[in-house]
Image (tube, rainbow, N blue to C red):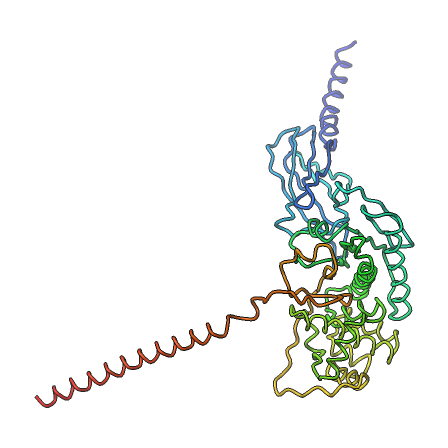
Length: 461
């Protein structure tokens, strides 16, 4: 081989070497052992092993939950590691700090990796169901309704699912509400099991709807099946209303949200109806405006709030039709205030609704107040455990917020701190304060008199 040919081959090899190195450097990083480890309901830890042809410079965990949002929401976390070609990374999402997700929610995640050469690798998105695997969950479905349970036989579960299906049909016919996504019901064996699955919920919570997640959770024992049949429809209604009105612009007043939920259950139970009738007769109805926010923690006022909300919604649907009810929900979704939405759809505001509704139920007109009426922010109210439930005796709060399925008042409930100190103690404290003020006054007057006397003596000298 001539010297010229050798030189030509050498030039070719040198020219292609950088290209081969660039191709090697452009290879994406590989990820193994990519998984999420659940410590339900406290935390989930994401772990992965990363191998790269170049030093791994940065790793970002992108994660989130499958739920309705006003826009694309991607949470990011930055696990700590020592840069190297092969690294192991992990990061823990602590629900005790962020607040927990509802059982059954889908969590997704992916890794974004950048090496020292600037090459970026994004892994495929993976998912895991946020659920307690200690229970042997079973599932039955009917259309877009999926019911998951682990205690009780097939008949128990089917009874609850049939009730939800019947309620869905009633909501469609009476209020124009229908599903636009599948809904999952997670039925716990009792309310204690249910409360163990969700962090930071009130001790009296017996069920709750998560409209943005399309999930309902309930603690239903075999003894509370009748309560469960009503409550599953109640919570399903919250999901439907939540979907129909979902936006980042406005709110749904509590009387409308809870009124629709109770209306979907059918007729009021006899005790709630009797309480409502007494309030009409004795002129002790609450103003509709006051029911726009959270309901009272006082039991009688809470039960009346639910029953009265039901009555108002019933009046709107039966007197003006379900089409207008649907239009009202859409107007609230689009950002209208409740007054503007009512005026637009029905021709009256909240006070006008008060007048129309009271006339329809033959109640006395509401007394006009000289003070402006506050307009509280709507507050979500979870469904309580039934009074007859097997865990009711363990509830520390005697003035729980009931639903329309609340059966009988608890006459044995002890006095609560809201009643204030005993009368004798109050009078004793009041007397002591008066005596103390009197002593201070006498001392002050004595000082003033003495000072004036000293000035007079000084003047006489």
